[in-house]
Image (cartoon, rainbow, N blue to C red; front, side, top):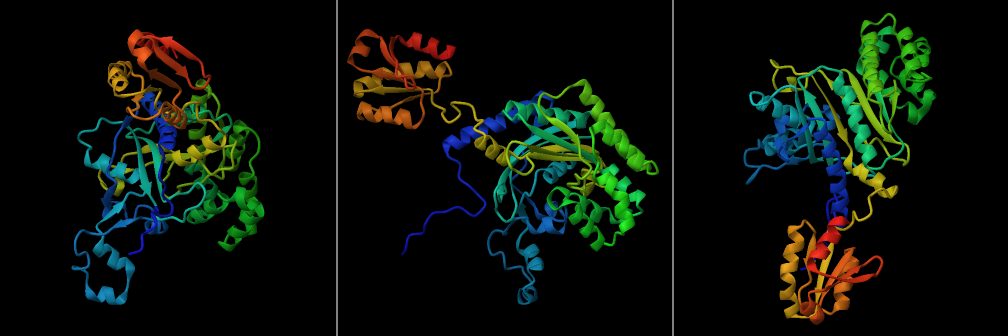
Length: 459
């Protein structure tokens, strides 16, 4: 029987120890900022019932959900006529009752409804877990990837939107990014624009087109809108709004003028202005906050603010996004309609950005601080109390087992980027003065066990 070449499914990856240290650096940084702002961590299962997920992401989203076959003879209960007709959709619902989660938002909504009697509202939660999408893999897009979400549900205060901006600013600054933009828009403004040109029924067509302005330019947007039934007169009215210029204050003033006849559009302007007012009192460290009227992501469920974060240092898609939704829980409980807002960090894209910019901190590719080397079994036994002493002082330490040549042990330290080595030989065991070597500089010292602990704790 021919051997099978080992591989992983397209769009998935293994992560080496060095990569995991870097990934955990990202996760730990983001989690620490979430906690600082009062968010608490939850986790939900890898699988959800298919009924929980299907129909929540639109027709295209439903196609990207990975379905899990029922256990046992999954074809036993399928109507034979369905098999003959080869209708994959009807067969799928019969043979698969569970699916891998597509995002963290819908499982969060399910969690809130299911645990509503145990939750204190407003409920501020964060979640860092993998999700799965049957998408076409490409640079920056995977079939299995992590999402880092923070949501607050049960509060309509615009302070939440302002704090999300601060969270993005603080976390990405801590990760070392020096030039990134947080773009903000408001669904109500987009609704107002559609209203003033009498195209409220075509708001999706309108926003899908203007969302592509960066990619296809004004001519491309115009062509797409004309194909969707918009007139030249409509587009003439849209142009000054789509091509807004100036700072955020000037853009808002222009919008107020253009949306003077739209109550909902002016309300959107008011909400944006309120968020800007909060940020003025809590200045950002690094981020550029930009009102971008072409931003229209997630329009099917966002009802207020819409966010998108992009780095200006690397050619990469968005590294974060989110917004305000008026009815998170309505998909599961029509009686309890809770407003909420949330954001997500694109951890995998952030990893690629930090890697390209060489922003991971020195030493982030090593977890062991000290390797204890020895010449023989006697040296190995002598090393055990030192091993425990170092570990009890929170110093990550390994002991190389007896029998290998010192050269091989040193190569092991070099290959794992272990910064310090302690060598235990006959002289060391007799005097208690241990050879302590800095692998970067090559400098060696004779130190007692207590002195080694003290030196490493200082470093």
